[in-house]
Amino acid sequence: MFDDQFYHKPPSTDNIEDWKEIIEESMRYAPPETRPGEKWIERVPMLTKDVNRTDSNGDNKNLVRFENPGDRENTGSFQKGIDVRELPPHTLENPETDEDDLNGGYGRFETFAQLGYKVWLIDRYKPDEESRSEFQKTHEDVREDSALSSNGRDKGSIAKKKDYVGVLRNKIDKYQWDKSECEKWFEKGIKHSLSKDQIRDYIKTAIREENAKNRMNWPKDYEVNQYLKDSGKKNVSILNTTHAETGNDQRFVRSLLPMMKSYNKTQETQKYCLYNTQADTHEKFDLANGEMVKMMTNHLDTILRFASLVSLKRLDNPDYTPYKAAYRVTQKIGKEKINQIVDYPES
Image (tube, rainbow, N blue to C red; front, side, top):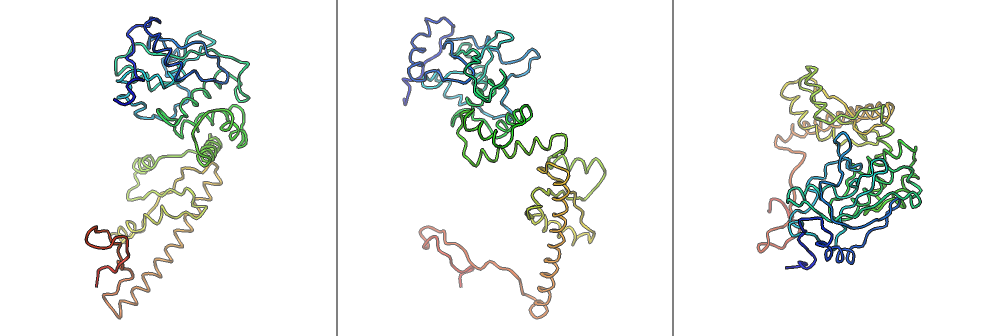
C-alpha cells in the first residue's frame, strides 16, 4: 500500500537495540528540531507511563490547550505503527523535579492508550537558558512557546484560536505586552501557519479579553435565558448588542418577524433583554446598548411607513403585495441552459 515502507510496528519493550533501525530511519527523515530555550538530548524509546503528563495535583500539564481539539490524531494512521517521517512527541526536563515533562504530543498519548501501545519513540530535551528567545523569561515561557510551536503546524493536532489567545493573555498579564510585542512574538517567537488576518484577530481578541478582566462578564445566550427564567420573567427575547455601536443591526433584524407575529397574537409590548459578549469596558457596554435601542426605534419608523404604504395600495387593489418572487436561476441540467436568469414563474 501507499507509504507502507515508512511505517514500523513499535516494539513492545524499551530496549534500545530493538528500536535501532526505527531510530536511524526516523533521524534521517525527521531530524530533531532546534527549539529556543531547549537543548536536544536524544531520541529514545520510552514507556508511555514514564512520560510525565500531570502535576503533583494530578492536573494535566498541557499549558497551551484552552479548547478541546476533539479527535486530535488520526487513529487509523497510528494503527499502522510509527511513521518515521513524523517528529515524535517531545519532553522537556523539569528543572524542579528532574522528570521528563511531555511538551508536545498530548493527543497522541491518548491514541497510544486506545491502541494499547506501551512504548513509543520520544525526543528528550533539557532546558538551555543560553538559547532562550527574547520572549522567554521563565521555564514556563519556554514550555508555552515550544508546545504552541508543536501544535502550530498545518497538520495533526493544530492549535485553535482559544489556545493562541489563552497563551497571549498570559503574556499580556505577566509582561504588560502591547499590540507591537504580541506581533513580534508571532513573527519571531513561535512557529505557526496562521495568516496575517488570523494573527490580527487573535491579538485583538486577547487584548480585549484582558481589558475586560475584572471589568466585564460575557454571558452565553443560554445563560441569559436561564437568568430570565430564574428571575421569573416570561416572554422575553434576548438581544446581543455586540457591535451595535458600529451600526450592526442584524441580530435585531433577524428577530423582527417572530416579534411581529408575537405582537399580532398578544397585542402586548414585546420585551427584549440586552446583553453583550465583547464590550471590554462599562462605557462600551452602555454605548452598544444605547445604539441598539436607537436602531430599534428607527426600524419601527420604517415598519410603520411600510405598513401604511401597503395599506393604501390595498385600498385600490386588495391583492397587492409589496414583494414577489420575480426570477429564478436555471439549474435543471439536460432540460434548460443552466446558470441563466429567467422569469418566475415562466410566462
